[in-house]
Image 1 (cartoon, rainbow, N blue to C red):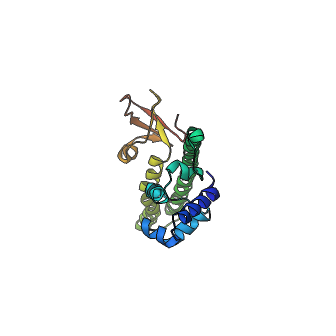
Image 2: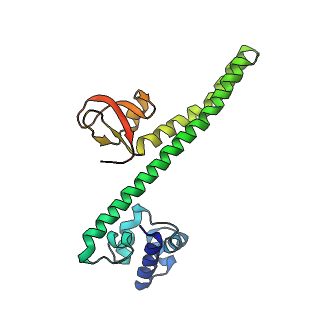
Image 3: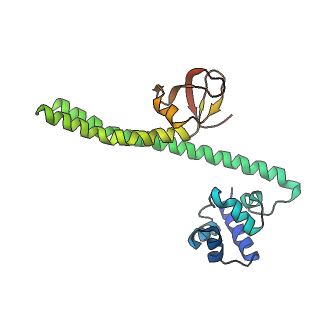
Length: 203
């Protein structure tokens, strides 16, 4: 999707409906700065207000995502292009989330490893060793729920038995035995328990 083209189209439709940026922002319950960012191609309208925005501008969502009023002749082609682009953007966002999860996991593990090395190798009283090791664990324990949440929502898990791809519940990811990002879970489709692999793209 061409954000600059979409931004220009939003500005054009806003003016065609005799609305200022402030008036449009008030109708959507957002700031005029957000509208300005759309029109300058710096950001996209949030999906939660997209339908309302299209109603106000008297266009379809397909028009908005295409950056122009789509004629009936090329409606299907534009719809497919927009859907493919949204899928591509989700895949890229999921890849970034999973990279961030890995980096955050490494960063959260460092204090624990340093604390363990110091606590086990430097001569000191036993209670001090325990305090140092436990203190090093705190960042990791705090980070784990957030890292699991990222892993749960980014991409999909694929059942080894039936190849069904799905997003599991957080509880399933939290309690499942795992090797890296492969988890032993029950498939919601075939109901078999097997090792489910994390994948970014959906078949």
